[in-house]
Amino acid sequence: MDNLAGLLDAPRARGAFALRAVMRSPWSLRDLADSPLTLIAGVAGVAGTLWVVPDDGDSFQIGPGDFAVIRTPLRYNLADAPGTPPQMIVHPGQQCCDLEGNSLHDTMMHGVRTWGNDAEGSTLFLVGAYEHLSDISDRLLRALPPRTLPDA
Image 1 (tube, helix red, strand yellow):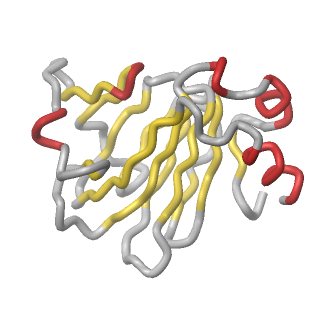
Image 2 (image 1 turned 90 degrees about the vertical axis):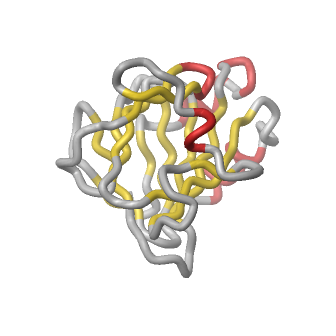
C-alpha cells in the first residue's frame, strides 16, 4: 500500500471534488460522471454500508473504515443493496439528476459539502473525485487497475 499512498499523495487534491454523502435506504445512484479517479470511503464508527455495482465484474461492499479507488472506464452504481435500481444519475461535472433529467441539487444538498437523500440517513460515506485528466498524473492512472480495494 506504500506505493499506492505515494501515488495518491502526488496530485494533492488540486481540481478534486469532495463531499460527505448521507443516505437513507432504499437508494441507488448511477455514476456517469466519467471522473478519471474516484475515492469512496465508509466512515469508521458509523453504521451503514454501501455497494459498488460495476457494469463489468463482481459487486463489492464498502463498510465503515473501508475504501475503494475507482478509475475510468469503470461504470457503476452505488447503492444500499446490489439489486436496488438507480433513482438518480450523476453526470459529468457532478450534476445529479433524477431519471427524468430534473436537477436534484437543491433537494440533495444539506449544508456545506454534505449531500444525500436524508440528512439523518444511516449510511454515511465520503466521495472524492478528480474530474479532469490534467489534475492527475499519467503515472498514477497507469499504475491503478479499474478498482483497488484494501484487501485486493
